[in-house]
Image 1 (tube, helix red, strand yellow):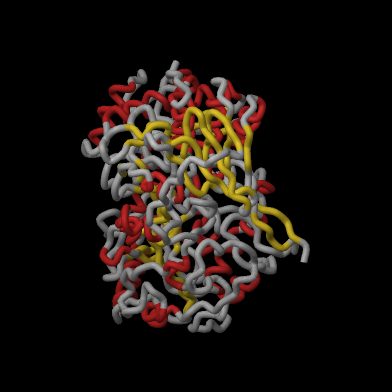
Image 2 (cartoon, rainbow, N blue to C red; image 1 turned 45 degrees about the vertical axis):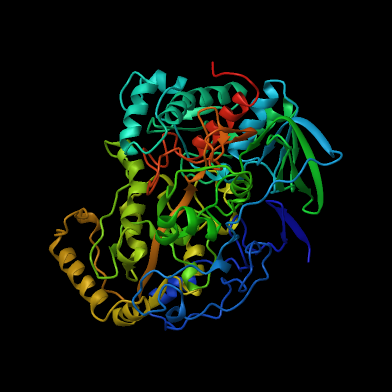
Length: 628
Protein backbone atom coordinates (compact mmCIF):
# COMPACT_ATOMS: atom_id res chain seq x y z
CA UNK A 1 0.00 0.00 0.00
CA UNK A 2 1.23 3.51 -0.80
CA UNK A 3 2.15 5.70 2.13
CA UNK A 4 1.85 9.37 2.91
CA UNK A 5 3.87 11.27 5.52
CA UNK A 6 1.96 13.08 8.25
CA UNK A 7 3.68 14.64 11.26
CA UNK A 8 6.73 12.57 10.41
CA UNK A 9 4.77 9.30 10.48
CA UNK A 10 4.11 7.03 7.51
CA UNK A 11 0.40 6.35 7.06
CA UNK A 12 -1.70 4.50 4.44
CA UNK A 13 -2.57 6.72 1.49
CA UNK A 14 -6.11 5.34 1.25
CA UNK A 15 -8.44 8.29 0.74
CA UNK A 16 -10.78 6.82 3.30
CA UNK A 17 -8.19 6.67 6.07
CA UNK A 18 -8.78 8.66 9.21
CA UNK A 19 -6.57 11.72 9.05
CA UNK A 20 -5.08 14.11 11.56
CA UNK A 21 -3.60 13.87 15.01
CA UNK A 22 -4.95 11.04 17.10
CA UNK A 23 -6.12 8.90 14.19
CA UNK A 24 -5.49 5.23 14.80
CA UNK A 25 -7.40 3.15 12.26
CA UNK A 26 -8.74 3.31 8.75
CA UNK A 27 -12.38 4.27 8.57
CA UNK A 28 -14.89 4.53 5.76
CA UNK A 29 -16.19 8.07 5.67
CA UNK A 30 -19.82 7.73 6.56
CA UNK A 31 -22.60 10.26 6.70
CA UNK A 32 -24.88 10.48 9.69
CA UNK A 33 -27.28 7.88 8.33
CA UNK A 34 -26.25 5.17 10.78
CA UNK A 35 -26.61 7.39 13.84
CA UNK A 36 -29.87 8.89 12.64
CA UNK A 37 -31.31 5.45 12.00
CA UNK A 38 -30.35 4.36 15.49
CA UNK A 39 -31.99 7.44 16.93
CA UNK A 40 -35.14 6.53 15.04
CA UNK A 41 -35.32 3.28 16.93
CA UNK A 42 -32.90 0.78 15.45
CA UNK A 43 -31.91 -2.06 17.78
CA UNK A 44 -28.94 -1.29 19.97
CA UNK A 45 -26.44 -3.86 21.15
CA UNK A 46 -25.50 -3.48 24.79
CA UNK A 47 -22.18 -5.24 24.45
CA UNK A 48 -19.18 -3.26 23.24
CA UNK A 49 -18.33 -3.89 19.59
CA UNK A 50 -15.24 -5.83 18.67
CA UNK A 51 -13.73 -2.63 17.35
CA UNK A 52 -10.47 -0.84 16.95
CA UNK A 53 -9.68 1.76 19.55
CA UNK A 54 -7.61 -0.27 21.99
CA UNK A 55 -3.88 -0.76 21.83
CA UNK A 56 -1.91 -3.91 22.41
CA UNK A 57 -1.03 -4.39 26.09
CA UNK A 58 2.34 -2.86 26.84
CA UNK A 59 2.48 -0.83 23.65
CA UNK A 60 4.17 2.48 24.40
CA UNK A 61 4.62 5.12 21.76
CA UNK A 62 3.01 3.23 18.86
CA UNK A 63 -0.51 4.43 19.51
CA UNK A 64 -0.71 6.37 16.21
CA UNK A 65 1.98 4.71 14.13
CA UNK A 66 -0.39 3.48 11.45
CA UNK A 67 -3.93 2.27 10.96
CA UNK A 68 -3.35 -1.40 11.67
CA UNK A 69 -3.97 -1.74 15.41
CA UNK A 70 -7.31 -3.51 15.75
CA UNK A 71 -7.52 -5.35 19.07
CA UNK A 72 -10.99 -5.74 20.56
CA UNK A 73 -12.38 -3.22 22.99
CA UNK A 74 -13.37 -4.90 26.26
CA UNK A 75 -16.99 -4.72 27.45
CA UNK A 76 -17.56 -1.57 29.46
CA UNK A 77 -18.24 -3.61 32.59
CA UNK A 78 -14.62 -4.72 32.42
CA UNK A 79 -13.19 -1.27 31.71
CA UNK A 80 -10.83 0.20 34.25
CA UNK A 81 -13.30 2.91 35.29
CA UNK A 82 -16.16 0.51 35.99
CA UNK A 83 -14.32 -2.53 37.20
CA UNK A 84 -15.88 -2.21 40.65
CA UNK A 85 -19.35 -1.61 39.30
CA UNK A 86 -19.59 1.85 40.89
CA UNK A 87 -18.33 4.06 38.08
CA UNK A 88 -15.48 5.45 40.15
CA UNK A 89 -11.97 6.23 39.01
CA UNK A 90 -9.59 3.40 38.36
CA UNK A 91 -5.95 3.69 37.41
CA UNK A 92 -5.47 4.38 33.71
CA UNK A 93 -4.14 1.59 31.55
CA UNK A 94 -0.53 2.43 30.75
CA UNK A 95 -0.85 1.03 27.23
CA UNK A 96 -3.31 3.81 26.41
CA UNK A 97 -0.51 6.38 26.81
CA UNK A 98 2.30 7.13 24.38
CA UNK A 99 4.80 6.98 27.27
CA UNK A 100 4.99 5.60 30.80
CA UNK A 101 8.42 6.33 32.28
CA UNK A 102 9.37 8.76 35.06
CA UNK A 103 13.03 7.81 35.41
CA UNK A 104 15.67 10.52 34.88
CA UNK A 105 17.67 10.36 31.67
CA UNK A 106 21.33 10.64 32.72
CA UNK A 107 23.72 12.96 30.88
CA UNK A 108 26.43 11.63 28.61
CA UNK A 109 30.14 12.57 28.75
CA UNK A 110 31.75 14.82 26.18
CA UNK A 111 32.52 12.79 23.06
CA UNK A 112 36.02 12.57 21.61
CA UNK A 113 34.75 14.33 18.50
CA UNK A 114 31.48 16.10 17.76
CA UNK A 115 29.35 15.37 14.73
CA UNK A 116 28.02 18.93 14.56
CA UNK A 117 28.87 22.20 16.26
CA UNK A 118 26.92 25.40 16.81
CA UNK A 119 26.35 28.13 19.38
CA UNK A 120 22.84 27.20 20.52
CA UNK A 121 20.99 23.90 20.32
CA UNK A 122 17.20 24.18 20.57
CA UNK A 123 15.28 21.00 21.36
CA UNK A 124 11.80 21.12 19.87
CA UNK A 125 10.35 23.08 16.94
CA UNK A 126 6.92 23.86 18.35
CA UNK A 127 5.84 27.37 19.26
CA UNK A 128 8.49 27.83 21.93
CA UNK A 129 11.29 26.20 19.98
CA UNK A 130 10.61 28.22 16.84
CA UNK A 131 10.81 31.44 18.83
CA UNK A 132 13.94 30.33 20.67
CA UNK A 133 15.63 29.42 17.39
CA UNK A 134 14.49 32.59 15.64
CA UNK A 135 15.52 34.88 18.49
CA UNK A 136 18.92 33.18 18.87
CA UNK A 137 19.63 33.38 15.15
CA UNK A 138 18.51 37.00 15.08
CA UNK A 139 21.06 37.73 17.79
CA UNK A 140 23.84 36.21 15.69
CA UNK A 141 24.01 32.67 17.07
CA UNK A 142 24.63 29.61 14.93
CA UNK A 143 21.52 27.56 15.73
CA UNK A 144 20.63 23.92 15.28
CA UNK A 145 17.05 23.01 16.22
CA UNK A 146 16.17 19.31 16.50
CA UNK A 147 12.59 18.09 16.28
CA UNK A 148 11.22 14.58 16.61
CA UNK A 149 8.30 15.16 14.24
CA UNK A 150 8.51 15.66 10.51
CA UNK A 151 7.45 19.31 10.42
CA UNK A 152 7.47 22.49 12.42
CA UNK A 153 4.74 23.88 14.67
CA UNK A 154 4.15 21.07 17.14
CA UNK A 155 0.98 21.27 19.17
CA UNK A 156 1.17 25.06 19.04
CA UNK A 157 -0.13 25.16 15.47
CA UNK A 158 -3.39 23.57 16.66
CA UNK A 159 -4.08 26.29 19.23
CA UNK A 160 -7.10 28.50 18.71
CA UNK A 161 -6.00 31.70 20.39
CA UNK A 162 -3.03 33.40 21.95
CA UNK A 163 -4.07 34.85 25.30
CA UNK A 164 -2.23 38.00 26.36
CA UNK A 165 -3.53 40.01 29.29
CA UNK A 166 -1.96 43.29 28.24
CA UNK A 167 1.12 45.11 27.08
CA UNK A 168 1.04 44.49 23.33
CA UNK A 169 0.69 47.27 20.76
CA UNK A 170 -2.68 45.97 19.62
CA UNK A 171 -4.07 46.05 23.14
CA UNK A 172 -2.67 49.49 23.77
CA UNK A 173 -4.64 50.68 20.75
CA UNK A 174 -7.77 49.22 22.39
CA UNK A 175 -6.74 50.60 25.80
CA UNK A 176 -7.02 47.14 27.33
CA UNK A 177 -5.07 45.42 30.11
CA UNK A 178 -5.77 43.24 33.13
CA UNK A 179 -6.28 43.72 36.00
CA UNK A 180 -6.73 47.35 34.92
CA UNK A 181 -5.61 49.77 32.23
CA UNK A 182 -3.01 51.15 31.71
CA UNK A 183 -0.83 48.07 31.57
CA UNK A 184 1.44 47.70 34.58
CA UNK A 185 3.56 44.57 34.96
CA UNK A 186 3.82 45.01 38.71
CA UNK A 187 0.04 45.31 39.15
CA UNK A 188 -0.47 42.27 36.98
CA UNK A 189 2.09 40.36 39.04
CA UNK A 190 0.38 41.34 42.31
CA UNK A 191 -2.98 40.24 40.94
CA UNK A 192 -1.59 36.93 39.65
CA UNK A 193 0.27 36.14 42.85
CA UNK A 194 -3.00 36.45 44.75
CA UNK A 195 -4.67 34.15 42.19
CA UNK A 196 -1.85 31.65 42.73
CA UNK A 197 -2.14 31.88 46.53
CA UNK A 198 1.42 33.25 46.62
CA UNK A 199 2.83 29.84 45.70
CA UNK A 200 4.74 31.15 42.67
CA UNK A 201 8.08 32.90 42.20
CA UNK A 202 7.11 36.60 41.91
CA UNK A 203 10.20 37.41 39.84
CA UNK A 204 9.23 34.73 37.32
CA UNK A 205 5.60 35.88 37.23
CA UNK A 206 6.75 39.46 36.70
CA UNK A 207 8.93 38.28 33.82
CA UNK A 208 5.92 36.62 32.20
CA UNK A 209 3.83 39.75 32.68
CA UNK A 210 6.60 41.93 31.30
CA UNK A 211 7.53 39.64 28.43
CA UNK A 212 4.14 38.64 27.02
CA UNK A 213 3.37 41.82 25.12
CA UNK A 214 7.00 42.25 24.05
CA UNK A 215 6.97 38.73 22.61
CA UNK A 216 3.78 39.34 20.62
CA UNK A 217 5.15 42.60 19.24
CA UNK A 218 8.49 40.96 18.37
CA UNK A 219 6.67 38.16 16.52
CA UNK A 220 4.79 40.84 14.57
CA UNK A 221 8.12 42.41 13.64
CA UNK A 222 9.26 38.96 12.49
CA UNK A 223 6.31 38.67 10.11
CA UNK A 224 3.35 37.32 12.09
CA UNK A 225 0.25 39.29 11.15
CA UNK A 226 -1.80 39.52 14.33
CA UNK A 227 -5.33 40.71 14.95
CA UNK A 228 -7.21 41.11 18.20
CA UNK A 229 -9.96 38.64 18.88
CA UNK A 230 -13.50 39.73 19.65
CA UNK A 231 -12.35 39.52 23.26
CA UNK A 232 -9.20 41.63 23.65
CA UNK A 233 -7.47 39.18 26.01
CA UNK A 234 -6.37 37.22 22.99
CA UNK A 235 -4.83 37.66 19.58
CA UNK A 236 -4.83 35.43 16.53
CA UNK A 237 -3.24 35.53 13.09
CA UNK A 238 -5.05 37.93 10.75
CA UNK A 239 -5.84 35.43 8.04
CA UNK A 240 -6.89 32.63 10.39
CA UNK A 241 -10.47 31.51 10.34
CA UNK A 242 -13.01 33.40 12.39
CA UNK A 243 -15.53 30.56 12.49
CA UNK A 244 -13.59 27.93 14.39
CA UNK A 245 -10.27 27.38 16.14
CA UNK A 246 -8.74 24.42 14.32
CA UNK A 247 -5.11 25.08 13.31
CA UNK A 248 -5.72 28.80 13.79
CA UNK A 249 -2.17 29.35 15.07
CA UNK A 250 -0.53 27.55 12.16
CA UNK A 251 -0.13 30.85 10.31
CA UNK A 252 1.91 32.17 13.25
CA UNK A 253 4.15 29.11 13.61
CA UNK A 254 4.73 29.00 9.85
CA UNK A 255 5.74 32.66 9.87
CA UNK A 256 8.20 32.15 12.71
CA UNK A 257 9.68 29.11 10.97
CA UNK A 258 10.21 31.19 7.83
CA UNK A 259 11.82 33.99 9.83
CA UNK A 260 14.15 31.60 11.65
CA UNK A 261 15.17 30.04 8.33
CA UNK A 262 15.88 33.44 6.83
CA UNK A 263 18.11 34.20 9.81
CA UNK A 264 20.06 31.01 9.24
CA UNK A 265 18.66 28.55 11.80
CA UNK A 266 19.29 24.93 10.87
CA UNK A 267 16.28 22.66 11.50
CA UNK A 268 16.72 18.89 11.79
CA UNK A 269 13.38 17.09 11.61
CA UNK A 270 12.73 13.46 12.52
CA UNK A 271 15.67 13.90 14.89
CA UNK A 272 14.64 13.41 18.54
CA UNK A 273 17.05 14.42 21.29
CA UNK A 274 18.16 11.47 23.42
CA UNK A 275 20.46 12.92 26.12
CA UNK A 276 22.23 16.01 27.36
CA UNK A 277 26.01 16.20 27.29
CA UNK A 278 27.65 17.48 30.49
CA UNK A 279 31.34 18.24 30.91
CA UNK A 280 33.52 17.72 33.98
CA UNK A 281 32.67 21.18 35.36
CA UNK A 282 28.94 20.45 35.31
CA UNK A 283 28.22 22.63 32.29
CA UNK A 284 25.77 21.43 29.64
CA UNK A 285 27.71 21.57 26.40
CA UNK A 286 25.52 19.78 23.89
CA UNK A 287 23.11 16.95 23.19
CA UNK A 288 22.86 13.59 21.56
CA UNK A 289 20.09 13.12 18.99
CA UNK A 290 18.92 10.36 16.66
CA UNK A 291 18.96 11.46 13.03
CA UNK A 292 16.18 9.87 11.02
CA UNK A 293 15.21 8.05 14.22
CA UNK A 294 18.29 5.83 13.66
CA UNK A 295 21.81 7.28 13.58
CA UNK A 296 22.85 8.82 16.89
CA UNK A 297 24.81 12.04 16.54
CA UNK A 298 26.41 14.48 18.96
CA UNK A 299 25.78 18.24 18.65
CA UNK A 300 28.01 20.72 20.47
CA UNK A 301 26.49 23.93 21.85
CA UNK A 302 29.05 26.62 22.63
CA UNK A 303 26.59 28.92 24.41
CA UNK A 304 23.52 27.00 25.51
CA UNK A 305 21.09 24.15 25.14
CA UNK A 306 17.47 25.32 25.21
CA UNK A 307 14.83 22.71 26.07
CA UNK A 308 11.49 23.64 24.49
CA UNK A 309 9.87 20.30 23.74
CA UNK A 310 6.70 20.74 25.76
CA UNK A 311 5.61 18.95 28.88
CA UNK A 312 4.44 15.44 29.73
CA UNK A 313 0.67 15.34 29.22
CA UNK A 314 1.06 11.94 27.53
CA UNK A 315 3.34 10.23 30.05
CA UNK A 316 1.37 8.27 32.63
CA UNK A 317 4.22 7.74 35.11
CA UNK A 318 5.17 11.42 35.16
CA UNK A 319 1.56 12.51 35.66
CA UNK A 320 1.16 10.02 38.50
CA UNK A 321 4.27 11.33 40.23
CA UNK A 322 4.19 15.08 39.63
CA UNK A 323 0.55 16.00 38.89
CA UNK A 324 -1.65 13.52 40.76
CA UNK A 325 -4.81 15.62 40.45
CA UNK A 326 -4.49 15.49 36.66
CA UNK A 327 -3.67 11.79 36.76
CA UNK A 328 -6.90 11.21 38.66
CA UNK A 329 -9.22 13.86 37.27
CA UNK A 330 -8.28 14.02 33.60
CA UNK A 331 -9.81 11.48 31.27
CA UNK A 332 -7.79 12.41 28.19
CA UNK A 333 -5.17 14.65 26.64
CA UNK A 334 -5.84 16.65 23.52
CA UNK A 335 -2.15 16.94 22.56
CA UNK A 336 -1.59 14.01 20.20
CA UNK A 337 1.86 15.16 19.07
CA UNK A 338 4.68 14.56 21.55
CA UNK A 339 4.27 15.64 25.20
CA UNK A 340 6.01 12.50 26.40
CA UNK A 341 8.39 14.25 28.78
CA UNK A 342 11.87 13.27 27.60
CA UNK A 343 13.28 16.80 28.02
CA UNK A 344 11.88 16.99 31.54
CA UNK A 345 13.53 13.66 32.31
CA UNK A 346 16.83 14.90 30.84
CA UNK A 347 16.67 17.83 33.25
CA UNK A 348 16.05 15.47 36.14
CA UNK A 349 19.11 13.53 35.01
CA UNK A 350 21.36 16.55 35.63
CA UNK A 351 19.82 17.20 39.08
CA UNK A 352 17.41 19.93 38.03
CA UNK A 353 14.83 20.93 40.59
CA UNK A 354 11.09 20.80 39.87
CA UNK A 355 8.60 23.65 40.11
CA UNK A 356 4.83 23.76 39.78
CA UNK A 357 4.10 20.48 41.56
CA UNK A 358 0.55 19.27 40.98
CA UNK A 359 -0.18 22.08 38.52
CA UNK A 360 -1.78 21.60 35.13
CA UNK A 361 -4.27 23.14 32.74
CA UNK A 362 -7.33 21.40 31.34
CA UNK A 363 -10.42 22.03 29.30
CA UNK A 364 -13.78 20.52 30.10
CA UNK A 365 -15.16 17.46 28.37
CA UNK A 366 -12.32 14.98 28.33
CA UNK A 367 -14.03 11.86 27.00
CA UNK A 368 -12.95 8.73 28.85
CA UNK A 369 -11.80 6.64 25.89
CA UNK A 370 -8.98 5.10 27.92
CA UNK A 371 -11.37 3.41 30.35
CA UNK A 372 -13.01 1.63 27.42
CA UNK A 373 -9.75 0.39 25.91
CA UNK A 374 -9.11 3.42 23.72
CA UNK A 375 -6.16 5.78 23.45
CA UNK A 376 -5.48 8.58 25.91
CA UNK A 377 -4.56 11.41 23.52
CA UNK A 378 -7.38 12.69 21.31
CA UNK A 379 -7.66 15.51 18.81
CA UNK A 380 -9.51 18.38 20.54
CA UNK A 381 -11.89 18.84 17.61
CA UNK A 382 -12.93 15.23 17.51
CA UNK A 383 -16.73 15.34 17.25
CA UNK A 384 -17.31 13.35 20.44
CA UNK A 385 -15.11 15.69 22.45
CA UNK A 386 -17.02 18.71 21.16
CA UNK A 387 -20.38 17.04 21.76
CA UNK A 388 -19.39 16.28 25.35
CA UNK A 389 -18.77 19.98 26.02
CA UNK A 390 -22.34 21.08 25.41
CA UNK A 391 -24.78 21.85 28.29
CA UNK A 392 -26.34 18.43 28.77
CA UNK A 393 -27.71 17.02 31.98
CA UNK A 394 -24.46 16.42 33.88
CA UNK A 395 -24.25 14.48 37.13
CA UNK A 396 -21.74 12.84 39.43
CA UNK A 397 -21.78 9.17 40.43
CA UNK A 398 -24.36 9.87 43.15
CA UNK A 399 -26.72 11.57 40.71
CA UNK A 400 -26.01 15.10 41.93
CA UNK A 401 -26.30 17.82 39.31
CA UNK A 402 -23.13 19.64 38.26
CA UNK A 403 -22.87 23.28 37.30
CA UNK A 404 -22.32 24.21 33.66
CA UNK A 405 -20.06 27.13 32.71
CA UNK A 406 -21.28 29.02 29.66
CA UNK A 407 -18.73 29.96 26.97
CA UNK A 408 -20.97 32.44 25.13
CA UNK A 409 -19.31 35.83 25.21
CA UNK A 410 -22.30 38.00 26.20
CA UNK A 411 -21.10 41.00 28.24
CA UNK A 412 -18.09 39.51 29.98
CA UNK A 413 -15.65 38.03 27.50
CA UNK A 414 -13.09 37.09 30.15
CA UNK A 415 -15.72 35.04 32.01
CA UNK A 416 -16.50 33.17 28.79
CA UNK A 417 -12.85 32.15 28.49
CA UNK A 418 -12.54 31.32 32.18
CA UNK A 419 -15.47 28.94 31.69
CA UNK A 420 -13.40 26.60 29.55
CA UNK A 421 -11.07 25.79 32.42
CA UNK A 422 -13.45 26.30 35.32
CA UNK A 423 -15.82 23.64 34.00
CA UNK A 424 -12.90 21.22 33.89
CA UNK A 425 -12.45 21.75 37.63
CA UNK A 426 -16.16 21.11 38.20
CA UNK A 427 -15.97 17.85 36.26
CA UNK A 428 -12.70 16.65 37.84
CA UNK A 429 -13.25 17.48 41.50
CA UNK A 430 -16.33 15.33 42.10
CA UNK A 431 -16.15 12.05 44.07
CA UNK A 432 -14.63 9.42 41.82
CA UNK A 433 -13.10 12.14 39.61
CA UNK A 434 -15.52 11.46 36.75
CA UNK A 435 -18.71 13.14 35.60
CA UNK A 436 -21.46 11.88 33.34
CA UNK A 437 -23.43 13.51 30.53
CA UNK A 438 -26.85 12.20 29.63
CA UNK A 439 -29.12 13.00 26.66
CA UNK A 440 -31.68 11.32 24.43
CA UNK A 441 -32.34 10.66 20.75
CA UNK A 442 -33.28 14.29 20.07
CA UNK A 443 -29.88 15.67 21.04
CA UNK A 444 -29.00 17.07 17.63
CA UNK A 445 -32.07 19.30 17.65
CA UNK A 446 -30.69 21.23 20.63
CA UNK A 447 -27.14 22.04 19.50
CA UNK A 448 -27.82 25.28 17.64
CA UNK A 449 -29.68 26.67 20.65
CA UNK A 450 -26.77 25.97 22.97
CA UNK A 451 -24.63 28.42 20.97
CA UNK A 452 -21.32 27.59 22.63
CA UNK A 453 -18.31 29.51 21.36
CA UNK A 454 -14.51 29.34 21.15
CA UNK A 455 -13.16 25.79 20.97
CA UNK A 456 -16.52 24.29 21.97
CA UNK A 457 -17.90 25.11 18.54
CA UNK A 458 -18.87 21.97 16.66
CA UNK A 459 -16.99 21.52 13.40
CA UNK A 460 -19.13 21.11 10.29
CA UNK A 461 -18.26 21.02 6.57
CA UNK A 462 -19.68 24.48 5.88
CA UNK A 463 -17.23 26.40 8.08
CA UNK A 464 -14.72 28.72 6.47
CA UNK A 465 -11.22 27.39 5.81
CA UNK A 466 -12.50 23.88 6.50
CA UNK A 467 -9.66 22.56 4.33
CA UNK A 468 -7.31 23.23 7.28
CA UNK A 469 -9.14 20.60 9.30
CA UNK A 470 -8.06 16.95 8.97
CA UNK A 471 -10.68 15.29 6.76
CA UNK A 472 -12.15 12.92 9.32
CA UNK A 473 -12.90 15.82 11.67
CA UNK A 474 -14.61 18.13 9.18
CA UNK A 475 -17.97 16.74 10.21
CA UNK A 476 -18.48 16.27 13.95
CA UNK A 477 -20.80 13.33 13.32
CA UNK A 478 -17.84 11.11 12.44
CA UNK A 479 -16.32 11.34 15.89
CA UNK A 480 -19.67 10.61 17.52
CA UNK A 481 -20.08 7.52 15.35
CA UNK A 482 -16.60 6.37 16.36
CA UNK A 483 -17.49 6.81 20.04
CA UNK A 484 -20.69 4.80 19.67
CA UNK A 485 -18.85 2.00 17.85
CA UNK A 486 -16.31 1.83 20.67
CA UNK A 487 -19.08 1.99 23.31
CA UNK A 488 -17.44 5.09 24.76
CA UNK A 489 -20.69 6.93 24.11
CA UNK A 490 -23.14 4.34 25.38
CA UNK A 491 -26.40 4.09 23.48
CA UNK A 492 -29.09 2.05 25.22
CA UNK A 493 -32.78 1.38 24.74
CA UNK A 494 -33.67 2.07 28.37
CA UNK A 495 -32.41 4.34 31.12
CA UNK A 496 -32.02 1.31 33.36
CA UNK A 497 -29.62 -0.32 30.90
CA UNK A 498 -27.66 2.91 30.55
CA UNK A 499 -27.54 3.30 34.33
CA UNK A 500 -26.12 -0.20 34.81
CA UNK A 501 -23.56 0.04 32.01
CA UNK A 502 -22.22 3.41 33.18
CA UNK A 503 -21.64 1.88 36.62
CA UNK A 504 -24.31 3.74 38.64
CA UNK A 505 -25.97 2.23 41.67
CA UNK A 506 -29.55 1.16 40.87
CA UNK A 507 -31.96 4.07 40.68
CA UNK A 508 -29.33 6.84 40.70
CA UNK A 509 -29.38 7.76 37.02
CA UNK A 510 -33.10 7.09 36.63
CA UNK A 511 -33.87 9.32 39.60
CA UNK A 512 -31.63 12.13 38.33
CA UNK A 513 -33.37 12.04 34.96
CA UNK A 514 -36.79 12.18 36.62
CA UNK A 515 -35.82 15.33 38.52
CA UNK A 516 -34.34 16.89 35.39
CA UNK A 517 -37.44 16.12 33.32
CA UNK A 518 -39.65 17.71 35.97
CA UNK A 519 -37.64 20.93 35.66
CA UNK A 520 -37.92 20.78 31.89
CA UNK A 521 -41.70 20.39 32.08
CA UNK A 522 -41.95 23.31 34.49
CA UNK A 523 -39.69 25.44 32.28
CA UNK A 524 -37.63 26.46 35.29
CA UNK A 525 -34.54 24.79 36.70
CA UNK A 526 -34.55 24.42 40.49
CA UNK A 527 -30.80 23.65 40.69
CA UNK A 528 -28.50 25.99 42.64
CA UNK A 529 -26.90 26.99 39.32
CA UNK A 530 -29.88 26.79 36.96
CA UNK A 531 -29.74 26.23 33.24
CA UNK A 532 -31.48 28.91 31.15
CA UNK A 533 -34.99 27.84 30.10
CA UNK A 534 -33.97 27.43 26.46
CA UNK A 535 -31.52 24.71 27.50
CA UNK A 536 -34.04 22.59 29.38
CA UNK A 537 -34.68 19.55 27.17
CA UNK A 538 -36.24 16.39 28.57
CA UNK A 539 -34.40 13.09 28.43
CA UNK A 540 -37.39 11.02 27.36
CA UNK A 541 -37.01 9.63 23.83
CA UNK A 542 -35.03 6.39 23.37
CA UNK A 543 -32.37 5.47 22.59
CA UNK A 544 -30.63 7.14 25.52
CA UNK A 545 -26.99 8.23 25.48
CA UNK A 546 -24.44 8.53 28.27
CA UNK A 547 -20.70 9.16 28.48
CA UNK A 548 -18.12 9.33 31.25
CA UNK A 549 -16.02 12.49 31.17
CA UNK A 550 -13.27 14.25 33.11
CA UNK A 551 -10.72 16.95 32.44
CA UNK A 552 -9.07 17.22 29.02
CA UNK A 553 -5.47 18.12 29.87
CA UNK A 554 -3.66 20.52 27.57
CA UNK A 555 -0.70 21.66 29.63
CA UNK A 556 1.51 20.31 32.38
CA UNK A 557 2.50 23.27 34.56
CA UNK A 558 4.92 21.18 36.60
CA UNK A 559 8.36 21.15 35.04
CA UNK A 560 11.99 22.07 35.45
CA UNK A 561 12.56 24.94 37.85
CA UNK A 562 13.85 28.07 36.12
CA UNK A 563 14.76 31.54 37.30
CA UNK A 564 13.52 34.73 35.67
CA UNK A 565 16.25 34.43 33.02
CA UNK A 566 14.98 30.96 32.08
CA UNK A 567 18.08 29.20 33.40
CA UNK A 568 17.36 25.73 34.74
CA UNK A 569 18.07 25.52 38.47
CA UNK A 570 19.62 22.54 40.20
CA UNK A 571 18.51 21.16 43.53
CA UNK A 572 21.20 23.38 45.07
CA UNK A 573 19.20 26.40 43.91
CA UNK A 574 21.96 27.49 41.53
CA UNK A 575 21.71 27.63 37.71
CA UNK A 576 22.96 24.64 35.76
CA UNK A 577 25.47 26.30 33.42
CA UNK A 578 24.51 26.21 29.77
CA UNK A 579 20.97 24.90 30.27
CA UNK A 580 17.76 26.87 29.63
CA UNK A 581 14.15 25.74 29.41
CA UNK A 582 11.00 27.28 28.01
CA UNK A 583 7.48 26.40 29.00
CA UNK A 584 6.14 23.77 29.22
CA UNK A 585 9.39 21.87 29.75
CA UNK A 586 9.88 24.47 32.49
CA UNK A 587 7.38 24.72 35.33
CA UNK A 588 6.22 27.22 37.90
CA UNK A 589 4.33 29.59 35.62
CA UNK A 590 1.23 29.33 37.79
CA UNK A 591 2.57 28.30 41.17
CA UNK A 592 2.06 25.07 43.05
CA UNK A 593 -1.11 22.99 43.27
CA UNK A 594 -2.96 24.86 40.55
CA UNK A 595 -5.85 22.70 39.41
CA UNK A 596 -6.40 24.18 35.95
CA UNK A 597 -3.62 26.74 35.71
CA UNK A 598 -5.63 29.97 35.77
CA UNK A 599 -5.15 33.23 36.08
CA UNK A 600 -6.96 33.09 32.71
CA UNK A 601 -6.94 29.78 30.90
CA UNK A 602 -3.62 28.28 31.84
CA UNK A 603 -1.43 31.15 33.02
CA UNK A 604 -1.00 34.87 32.55
CA UNK A 605 -0.36 34.09 28.87
CA UNK A 606 -2.75 31.26 28.23
CA UNK A 607 -0.89 28.25 26.95
CA UNK A 608 0.46 28.60 23.42
CA UNK A 609 1.37 32.22 24.16
CA UNK A 610 3.23 31.05 27.26
CA UNK A 611 5.24 28.72 25.02
CA UNK A 612 5.86 31.54 22.54
CA UNK A 613 7.03 33.85 25.32
CA UNK A 614 9.21 31.19 26.96
CA UNK A 615 11.07 30.55 23.73
CA UNK A 616 11.51 34.28 23.14
CA UNK A 617 12.90 34.77 26.64
CA UNK A 618 15.22 31.76 26.35
CA UNK A 619 16.58 32.97 23.05
CA UNK A 620 17.13 36.43 24.48
CA UNK A 621 18.89 35.52 27.71
CA UNK A 622 20.86 32.52 26.42
CA UNK A 623 22.54 34.87 23.97
CA UNK A 624 23.44 37.55 26.49
CA UNK A 625 20.75 40.04 25.40
CA UNK A 626 18.10 41.84 27.42
CA UNK A 627 14.45 42.69 26.84
CA UNK A 628 14.04 46.04 25.11
